[in-house]
Image (cartoon, rainbow, N blue to C red; front, side, top):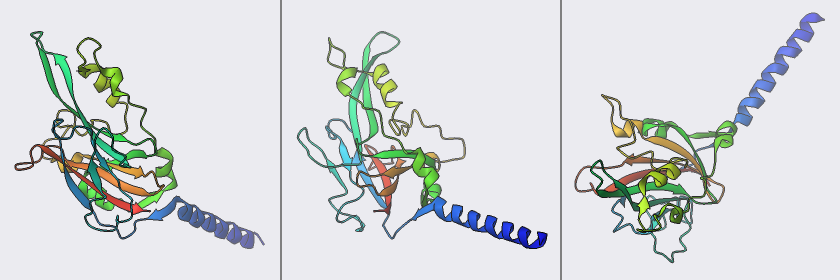
Length: 230
């Protein structure tokens, strides 16, 4: 009798383990292409941001005009992530006013994301979305760029803007003066890979593949994404 009860208990534990495993892995990657685009990093060219829309009517195509758009002050392009750039100002050690481009990746209000790993190899290996992953997804805090302008000069203050962007899920973490690339490794091996829940409720993976590529694309940045599920 004890043996029968023991066998039943073991069998039940196996069933529970199987059910837990099936529940944990809830979404597997569909047949969607990997997409890569060079986006302008010059704030004079990319004035209002480049919006990226992962899921749309043609997301199964390798390339389509619906994937991204350079926005204007009146654009109604519906994006998941925006590559936005302004010039931030600061005083150097000599007290002279200096400026530099301050690019950042900003989530839309309807988008959530979380860092899952690093490098192109990890990007390729990320094919399952689990409940644990989904529980980590978060929105960006609201970033109002007007709050970081100096009232006298109208310039964006570098220090306060950096503080705000560092609170974002992606923010400016991909920049070459911020990202740490260990000796013997390449940028592609250490750039962060993010799981993104799109505004439609689907899932995609996203990364900045190269922040400052070689010529002739040295003034652009190479982004990479792939839809996992609509």
